[in-house]
Length: 365
Image: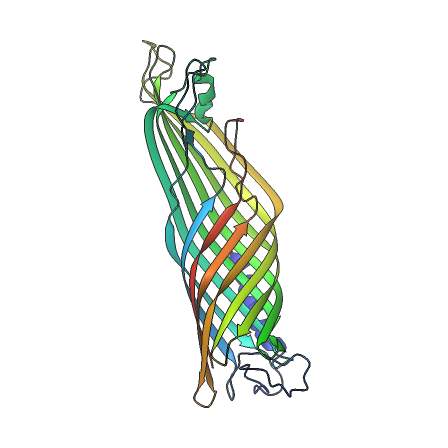
């Protein structure tokens, strides 16, 4: 982690100074392209006059984060002797949580290039608990599937709870150029890097039903993932200018992320009632029944999309620029569910999705 921070702190100053020669005054501030311009792709900024052309950004996020493959219990399984009512698949209740982005950039005096680095943070969690006498588990916690009778009589568990937690940290570093392709349409292709580290935890708890063969137990699973990655990121920002103030934007970015997953799974069983008069282990004893780690590297894909409305203004003889925009953003982290699984009844791997409202402000000087 220290190396990642050191790398980021070194890259930005070098990027800001690498092309810092000549005048800081650009020919165009990036309002609307002049129809008579002889430049093939006029600079679209936005930039200021007489300043250092540094800008800061801040975003407020209100996002939902969710992951595929986290069903922890189901109902609706019959006994092959009578018709069963329609059941349900139970997964955590996904929540909406606030987050933020902060960034700093510089409009370089070299052909309208710009360099920009942005940090994103969001913390999200979800949980749900259900109870009843017709529940079946989707995770083989503490060899729970061995309790299920051969004729698949439902109701192995009476209580189930699933909880999911995400700590999401990302740095995006970009080198781009914003330019007009027509009088009212500008594009900004960019390339750079994505850095990320994430903590993802999924915990499941079951309570079994006491029978003449099955003890009444609490079964608990901890599936914890420490994830980090660095990869190449490229994309395109589009802006349709209605006039010099208002515009519509649409952005796209793709990342191939070289990633490391460090995964730990631990299952615990605690019996508190047993059909056996001399149970082993003794009642109330926490018995760790599964304890394993998995560590591997892979390349994962990330897709980012956003769309929204923007307003921007120059003031004080165009020495300062202010922008505000509001829109919707979506991120797809492909095949990001890598929790350790033991049995076919468990859910398959799946994607992680983040989406929601974004409010951005930018100030240039």
